[in-house]
Image 1: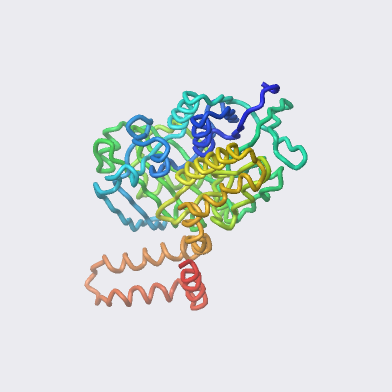
Image 2: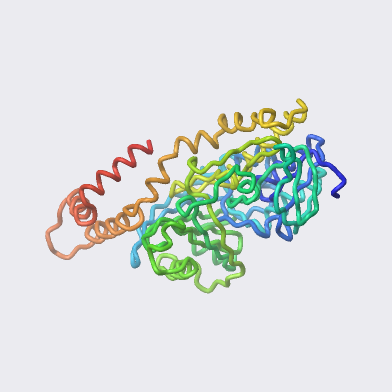
Length: 431
């Protein structure tokens, strides 16, 4: 293998890497896709929700064939204290009515192998179970990879090795991650009978629920809880920013156990059996953590490029991964046609990204990491909501006050003028 030169080598068999590999192979290029796991998807971890629009561009109507779990038709957001939960829900058949606007719950252990199979059918040489130690650089240009001492050459390398991206770090394209830039996610997949899931969540057929929660899920620290319904399992997890881990004495795995025991969550998973347990780092700093994306002979894409946006009510990463993988592949195709794999020859990737929804959304939402990192959002706000709702829904024969007075009194008891002014400032900056 070391004597053969590929048109492109892609490191990482997740959604970004596999999408790029598939498109390049379909363009007639010789492609090697290397993944460290025993199979593509074995090491990939996510909450489990895929917004379909990006993949529809590559595989129109993919949901009819791919191993999706359920189509999300029920949205739910919760603000939690230890004993209460304010739930905001929205259910509509309009959610996902159009295939391009649909979203699905998926399990990487099923979905990614399907995508890898599509790559192999297109002619990609898939090599699982291989650890790529570094990129090979000659005269300032990336010319291949070093996998345990075995050198494999190519015109271009696409780095899609995940949020840490040690390859990009070794090249100096990406700085070492700081605790403020990433969160750690811990997730379980819990086995339950399909009909039990339907009854408990009030769904039928392939309808699914996406449920995100903040507040007590992370004991008031920056982060949140997630719950997604699959066909006959439930994906449940906790995401907590590394910088906030010291805020509480509770470990991340214990936070998940605690979340599962919350009175608003426990009835939905009761009697289930945990069949999968995983953990993963999650990019959290938005546009502020995007690294250098292109150099001579190399591009960075997917999680490795920090393409994730968390708005609290939606968490987007997989659609960014697919789109960035597609754009990287198209840039490589243009570079091959021009016979120029230099930074300048590959720069159409950056141009395409800047015109795509990825960069437009990340730039438009650049202020949200600052808002979501504030303690008021995860501790004070849930406590205020608990206080207001308890008073609002309690009838004891005592005189009631206007709703606005409940809000004012609760805000006064939880937030100082300085905190409120600072919070409003961050919100204004975000928009």
